[in-house]
Image 1 (cartoon, one colour):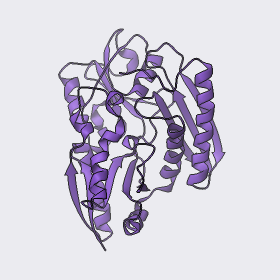
Image 2 (cartoon, helix red, strand yellow):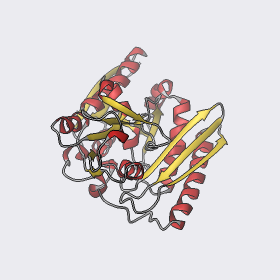
Image 3 (cartoon, one colour):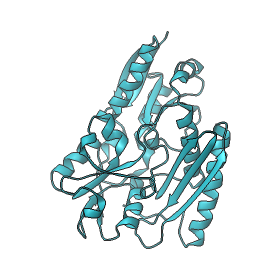
Length: 311
């Protein structure tokens, strides 16, 4: 038994995630409290993340709390965690994944195909922007920042015909009824780590790492290790229109990756590979191979891995 403090963002979804981990740890005999924090990513809402420093803005303050001993672990949506963690930090645990897919939310239309020409769709994700334009180049894609409740409120205020959100967040907060349509990965490939929770700790805190070990879900961890390897090798962040999604069947891990042009000028580039994996190292190796293939195809098609569009 130990006394543990979880650092978390204070959005409703982040608090749900932290309370979920808190509940499981308490069931295992630990005393667990929460430390709610506001991050830069929560405060800067008038610009796209790709313009102000990326998804690391959602984790920096939590890492400071870990470094200063105010907290023992931090719970993150894994897709918000940078591919390279600062020295002295590590992912101690990846938990079982929720639905990894994207969802269309609209008060007027049942699916993407039913949206009229020129309809306004909200998202600030360059990945979603590129994939939406590949599916419906006639739509008008507008920025959409804020936590989940803020995004839904903007939709309800009539600023958008539809918005695209992660299905996992809606389901975790009991808002699954807001989903009008689910995008299958064949049409809208998820972001690396989407739907999974990652728990970050200081690398030397073996006691916390040991306490978190029973919460890990190996199938999910192998899949997201490959996905994050793709993004890491591509230099991926929210400033790159990149998608990666892996599934495990038996010992065979299959991974799809895609790079898209947010402006819609260049064609979507997709690659797929499969291999037998037995550990995180082999899953990471597969992801790196996929990234090399994707990189070569993007460059051959005239795409850029550095000069990405800004939403």
